Amino acid sequence: MYIGSPPQRQTLIIDTGSRLMAFPCEPCRSCGSHVSKKYFNPLMSTTDNTPTCGSCMLEGISKCSEFSTVVGNGKGAKNKKCVISQKYTEGSSWTAYELEDMVWMGASDHQESIGMEYMKMAVPYVFGCQTSEKGLFRKQYADGILGLAIHESSLVQALYDARSINRLAFSLCLTKAGGSLSAGGIATEERHLEPIRFTPISRDHGWFALTVEQVLLGSVCLAGCKTKDESSSFTLDHEDTALRAFHGGKGTILDSGTTDTYLPQAIAEKFQKSWKSLTGGLQYSRRRYKYSYAEYEKLPSLTFKFENNVTLTVQPDSYMESVSASKILSRDPWEGTIELVNRIYIDEPTGAVLGANTMLGYDILFDIEGKQVGLAKADCDTEIYHGVVDTERR
Image 1 (cartoon, one colour):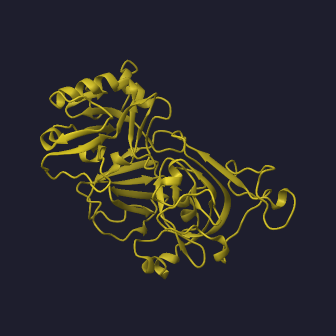
Image 2 (cartoon, rainbow, N blue to C red):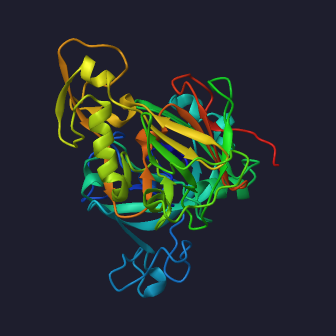
Image 3 (cartoon, one colour):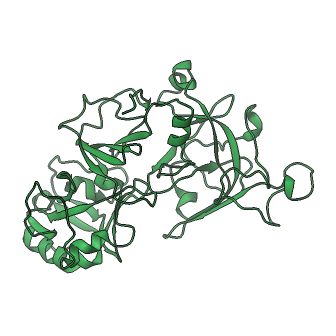
């Protein structure tokens, strides 16, 4: 992301499970060291604006209190900054204040990103200027976070309102080494390995929740195992406890900001038994284990079938992670053993979170305007133009 005039670059985590953009700003004394090395400096930008109490722009998110930071030498609530605080279930948190500046999406090449082709897409956008970070936010590689959940305050909505994009949508094509984000739609179908298929967004709570009709571990059905006529519409079988668990709470959501995948605990027993049977006796475990390639080959895929017969299959090289930071797991054979850890959890109380590791190798279109999500297997390593793409409104 590029912010301000002159532009300052920030590398952000793409999070479809939250709605705010935030990163450290000078002079943050309680923030960690991240990839950009330098924090965003508002004093260097000629286009920044700091909303103050009484004119906060993130209604329902920001707040003012006696502890709010005072802007300049003024006194009283009118001169206090609009404070944002976010906490996460694993213990991380950050605090920030509202700042508005020109924002646009760039490419991996810095000079290309500050050229007119990209800068003409810049829009004024309100984000969180972080003054403190705790937990994983303080230690992470990325500078901050870009929330892309369905909300009027999202960057995609701002791009759409400014007519920088013609459709309220964006797409992600992720790899373990990175990937691409395109605003406005799919950047190119040339890297697709199959036609894109669409499934409806099933809830109106702001997350990208999908209707799960069946879940398979390898060839073993874990949920939604009753056969149905493919032409008939989906009806939740309330006697199917396992499938009902995927529809409980927030439902089953696509959340790129969560690295791992969390399945409902209602399927835990069947998952563990099936895992052992399919792998020839290996116990399902979240502990580190040294796998030979022969053992690794036996690990099953995990398949989700959504409404409209849309399928998402997660291979072992996506959900298993090498303990060695220098080793990216691939499908190539190896000699001896490699220490791996399983990144599928089966302890979610209700609903499911399909994290970034389930999205690898798919071009996923988050079509907010069409209230649907499109999925296609893709070669996400392919170099493409990425950033803002032009699409016609439908």
